[in-house]
Length: 231
Image 1 (cartoon, rainbow, N blue to C red):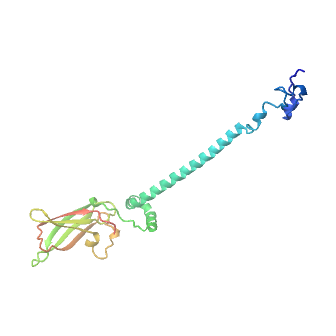
Image 2: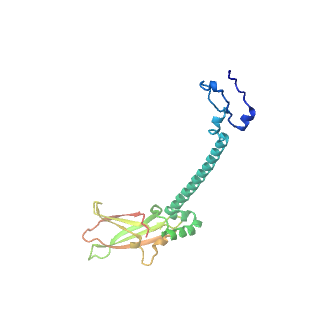
Image 3: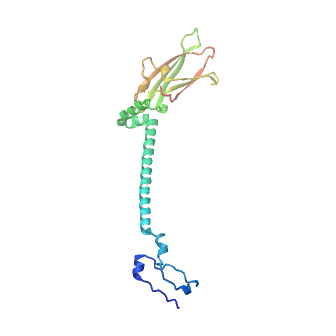
């Protein structure tokens, strides 16, 4: 008996149903005499490629876009927060200069300082304050160690400035330093004077300091202005 090829049945392929062929008994020992299902060549690929690759790519692209937008929002929010923080720090450290250059900002700076427990004080600019006159005289001939320092300061700025610190150096006849002391505004201003109010624009003040030099017997002095710390 001769084996004849079985033609493909389109109805069987469409239905995806396996079909068996009966082999006569006298050929059952033949290598090909086993019942094998006739299946479509695509049966083996049906389970592995059940997912639509185009649809998977589209889903991945959509997820990438969503994640990308989320990262952009996060970066923008972080940048805005960083700018706000830097602006706040600049306003805190330069509050005195900002209040002078932009008077309209002073009320807001005062509110900011109320929250941060700080003060909006006039800026410290000793170079804009000139020593118009200064003198050192003995006040009691019987006690040569008692002397009085007199100095006149003038604010040449067009706005209020913080009161400076006085750097006094006592010297001998050879102009060598005998002693040095720094006087803060609270040391030389009159009692009841508000240090935080600052020195008014184009104003002039006269300072008098009584000093006890002991046995130093100073022959001269040097006077300079320094930035004073916040009161």
